[in-house]
Image 1 (tube, rainbow, N blue to C red):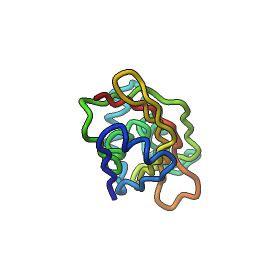
Image 2: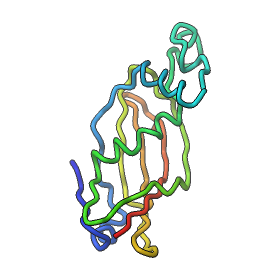
Image 3: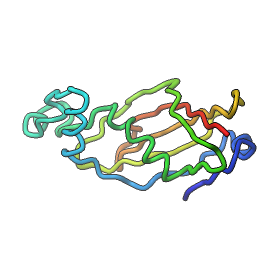
Image 4: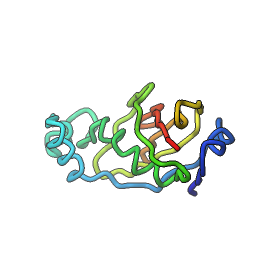
Length: 151
């Protein structure tokens, strides 16, 4: 289910609401390898599936920051913002990675509106994101991300 927000007033009206969940996405070894190349983080637990099979998680795992980097695409499946000139990622207030995301597993993201405040020319929106890996009892990532949308 997608929530469409049209303008600042509608943002203020949905504070405290959980907007829903994105679709499930399978995390592939190719994604992990490309992320490793982009960031220079080639730790074996991510990029060497054979060695990682004997490691603490029994498989290669995605980088925590890869999980977080999927926020914009997964968020876009839950929240669509209209009636604004543009929006920018303003940062994160808190990020934790309680459980690994094994390569080959499915991941999705839940979105809630934590708070909304007016800023010059627009609005700042704090979103609580919860990333779940299918079959896991703990979230893979919990983050409060901050976006600014301008008129």
